[in-house]
Length: 208
Image 1 (cartoon, rainbow, N blue to C red):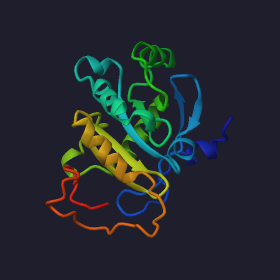
Image 2 (image 1 turned 45 degrees about the vertical axis):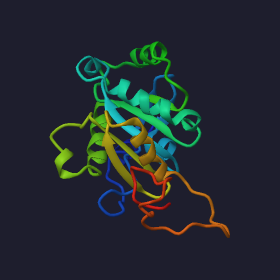
Image 3 (image 1 turned 180 degrees about the vertical axis):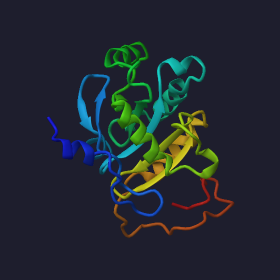
Image 4 (image 1 turned 90 degrees about the vertical axis):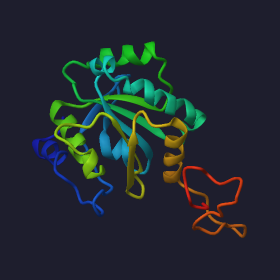
């Protein structure tokens, strides 16, 4: 059992880096397989992750999970090894662990994708914290369930894309956050890629 001070500390805004920052509320969350995690210290810190807010009932009107499943498919074997996906319910009272587990079973969620159930306060705290990474255009009252946040918890860099964006583009964005290899003698220069380069990534103007 957490003492009262520890419980309160989990909701306090930790130090940040710039507008986005690297720290998030370390609130407890329960995954669809019944495991309990501390959100920041166990799921975000030193990991590359995608984070989405959703509710199971809302899938009837906007199937955000189906869109994200296409991104998960594009990731292939990297999911669970190099990148993790976390879908956080905004309606923990309705989305019980049993309902989340049933959804995961019916939709054959791959390893590396966790459906997470925080407390009501925890869901709001996480939603408010991730909203700091959104542009003003995408911020509004309530938790934005149409955006996917992606970042590297080891370095504190985060971005976002629409959940129904092109899956290949989404995976390309996430790849920018993945830990690179130590440069050797054949290291490439950074900067704009030559426009005539046939291997140029259509989603990026950088060489590396």
